[in-house]
Image 1 (cartoon, rainbow, N blue to C red):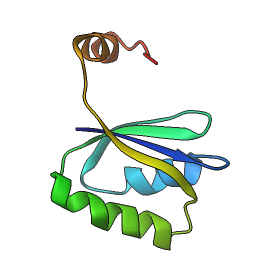
Image 2 (image 1 turned 45 degrees about the horizontal axis):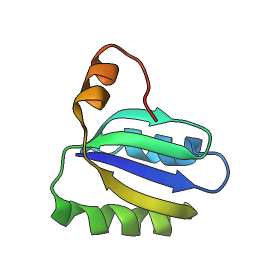
Image 3 (image 1 turned 180 degrees about the vertical axis):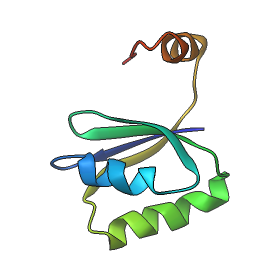
Image 4 (image 1 turned 90 degrees about the vertical axis):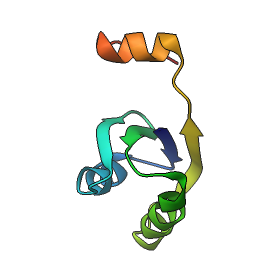
Length: 82
C-alpha cells in the first residue's frame, strides 16, 4: 500500500525516518508531503503514526492511497501523478 503523509514545514526529517524503517520503500519527499510504499499491513500503521508523533513530526494528514493503473504506469516510467 502507498502512504501519503503531509507535514508542516520541511518533509526531510520524515523522509529520513522512513528511510531507516524496514517497512518503508520508494520514499519520495515533496514540498510538504512524503509518499512511500508501505510493506506492512494496516495493523502496523498506528505504531508508525505514534513513532512519528513521538519524533516531533508535525503531521497534517496520514493517508493510505490505492494505486490506480495511471499511478502504476507513472511510477514505473519514473513520472509523477497528482
